[in-house]
Length: 457
Image (tube, rainbow, N blue to C red; front, top):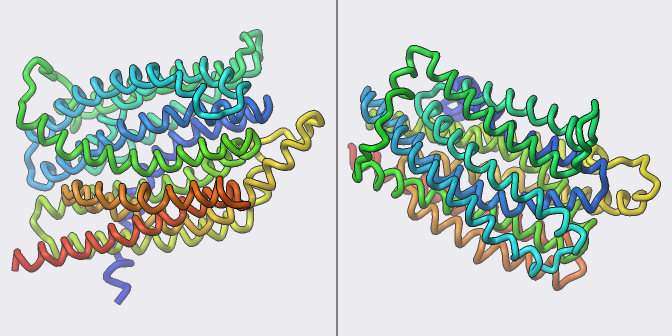
């Protein structure tokens, strides 16, 4: 019975590994920032967490919107229509650039909110200059996403990975030089981390464009754009897919961001612990995201071929692979829940010894919950990817809103701020929302594929 699914594992892994590595690259930028900034103290780590919470919300909208390009390119590729593939990229690039500039402007306007969020005053003062630079880095990041989603739509997942690896090298080097002021560079603290992030994201988009341009297969796709001539029909198509996809990602990222803010109400140590647990779980989540992209590509191809029984079988094979992988991550989190948080802090710093001990204790408790929600989180994101490949985005958007904001957030708020559970209660709410999302999205996939098979018979 399982062989019809397991025989797809090899190709699914080949397709998804470069995507996973590329997505881990985005997380490694944050990981490098967190580990290096964590050496400065818990207030600085909490400030990076608070600043990034604003950026994560905007980033989720940009990345979610850009995913509209992949199923359109995958469907065009499956149907052998090169013109439609290039059209999707051109219009996607124009819309992503506009969106990136808009999101940057909105973050600047939202900065005064930091003073009204009951966050520690020292954390807010540190976070504000950091936020300005990291917010601007959204512009090159979202332009990069357009090229990335296009490349993945053609089942070429390695090139964005190369660009992301280069960006991480640049980020870590600049962090080392500018956070601590080594080799005569100015010691800029967390502002140095922000500069590293900004420069690395510009390098990333420029490198990927040159890489695609240099390959004969991609050259005609990524050159000779006429942005003066945009077709209303294609713009509407991308927006109709991209806007609901952006909302889906926003609803999930926003509930994790709310966990950062709720943790800030509990104090800087709770917020620092939340940041550590969130960063670790974000890294494992990228494996689910990568497999979700593989699901989107393969399901999109089968949609172009109109082979709906294969579409269903391939989708389920990726769900099963994700489920097995997330069980492995759950075990790792259980075994390493005390050791992993210690990597983020300077345990030899006597002045912060009490704070560091409390942060590690809270983070270990959060990783217990994170171990369980690895499975729910991985499954829901990969099913969501398959539904995007089918270009079904409106009902899944409603499902994610209900799961995270009508089910998950109320549980987080009540258990976190109204009971003795504190930070653990906040994360139990996250677990509840993710599990509800995974169950409802799978029911949707099951219903739609059965309907498509019946109609084509």
